[in-house]
Each structure stands twice: as structure tokens, then as C-alpha cells.
Length: 382
Image (cartoon, rainbow, N blue to C red; front, side, top):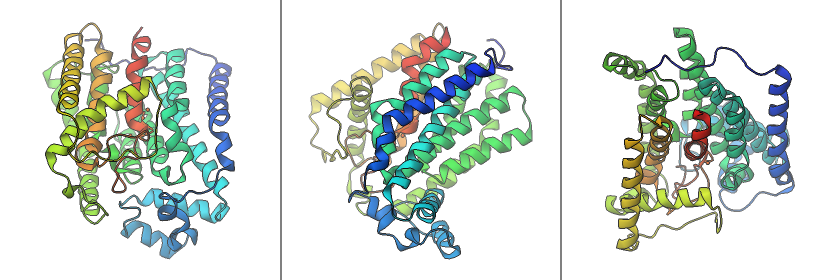
């Protein structure tokens, strides 16, 4: 297999980079900018912002201590809590300012994603297309215009930064560069714990497009390389499990079989919503074991078939197995342990790119990145 494919220099003039970046930012504000005129809503915004004295007081030492030591909205994500405090410090309870921050974070995530994909694949225009697809897909609406979904856009941004830092590290491996990868991943995890699968996602990227898996010794080295990231993920997972037990509507109320059935159908539902984003809603109540057996069976057959197809084509089209497994893996924690809803239009985020309350369905940025990646990876590979 060829040597790692990481771009070492720009093949486009700076003015082109600037033009694409400005265009991406402009289209995001064109699509989502009207949200600055929207108010808070009475679904989670009170829990996350205007009903929390610790948040509405702005940035204070007691507030910082509270963010680091207390559960907020059913989860422990201190960086998200601190970001809400900063907004209250800047804007008070003027909802437009909070919406503006969400839009800015999402814009930055799209721009960083563009650069990261360009660095990993060398495909400038196709990377721009994937970033634009991620930026303005209808599934992004909930994450961007819902203030309580700050954790989604914030973790999406840090996930994109983690991808970029990893591409930078692969170009020239060093301890200093690896620390940047750890820092970006750690900040993403304390924004939202859905990034726990990042080490596995990096192994997929090592296969394609980075092409670092040349032989068995290389695979062993790559796995060892991910151990510090895995340690971060394990620590985040333990913290999440402990805090989720205290959250309203613990998933222990749902049998494992119900969660697995829900996961199978949710995978297919999310794929359908990606390609046909219609009849979307804020909340999709769990079916509590009432899913038809035929629906579960067909979903399982569909997922197994696509997995088999991607595997059979892995040598000729390695981007298919990478994109498909990215989607399956990064979606798994939410769909199995945390999933109390049938489906939703939020992780987005991923990288579209996706369990902070009983619903456990506020995560579309990283998921979306996986599906956006699949839908455009063919063009990236050319």
C-alpha cells in the first residue's frame, strides 16, 4: 500500500483558499443567520441556560468550580457549561447572542473540516464540497439553531480540529504534534462525550485516506499509537456512565434488547433522513419494544448487506469501507447505551459530523461527518 497520503503543500493560490473560506462562512450565515432573531424555547434551554443561576451569573470562580464538579443537563460537559457562562457574560439573556455563538462555532467547524479533508486527501475542491454539504444540510438545523445544543456544535468543532491535528501529526510525527491531537480530542470530550470513538475513527483514517496500514507491524504500531487517545475516551465514558445514572429517565429502564432493536432501525432512519430530510421533528419518542419484527429484520439485513458490500469492495474502493464503518462506529454509543429515542436530527456532526438528557439524541455533528463523508468520498478518492 502506498505511503501516507497527506498533503504537504497547497496546490491552490491563497486567494482561492480565502474565496472558498469566505463562501463557506457566507452560506452558513445565509442559511442559519435568521436564528439570531429567535428566542429561547422551553425545551432544554431552561435547563441549560436561563433557568440555571450558575450559568446566568456569567463567568465567576464559583461558576467555574460548579461546571467542573456538577452534572449539567444530565451530563458532565464542563466546557459546554463554561461556553454558556461566557455567552451570559457577553449577552446576558438576549437569546440572539447565544444563537450567534452557535452559528459562529458551526461556521468554524465547517472551515476546519474543509482544511482537514484537504490535508488528508489532497482533493481541494472535493473537500470544499464535503464541507459545504456538512455545513448546510437540513440535519444541521437542530444543532445550530437550538441553544441547548451548544454541546453539539462545540464538540463538532473540536472533532474537526482533532482531525486536522491528526493530519498534521501524520505529516511529521512528533510528541509535540501528538499533544495537539490529545488536546483537541480532550476538549471535544469535555464538550460532549460522543467523541469516545475517535481512536477507532483514526484507525479507519489510517487505512484510507492516510494509507498507513502497510503491513501487520504497522497495524500494531498504529494501535499502540492510539493508547493515549483511548485512555481519554475510557475516562470520558466512565464519567458519562456515572452521571447518566443520576439523570432523569436512566437507560436502565430500557432492556438491552429494546436498545439494540432501536439501534438497528435508527441507523436506517438516519440514513434515510440524510438523503431525504423530510418529516423531521425535535423529539422522536422511543417505541419501548413496539417496533414491528419485520422492520427490525429488514434493518438488520440492510445494514449487514451494506457492510458486506463495502468489505468486498475494500481493495478497489477503500473509501467506502472507511466511510461506512465511520458511520456505524461513531453512531454506536448513542444508539445502544444512551439511545432512548428512535431517531433525531441532531449529532450535527458529525462530520451530518453526532447524551445529555433522557432522550440521549442530541448528537449529529460527528454522525453526519460519517454520512457526508460516504456520500462524497467517491469524489474525494478520484
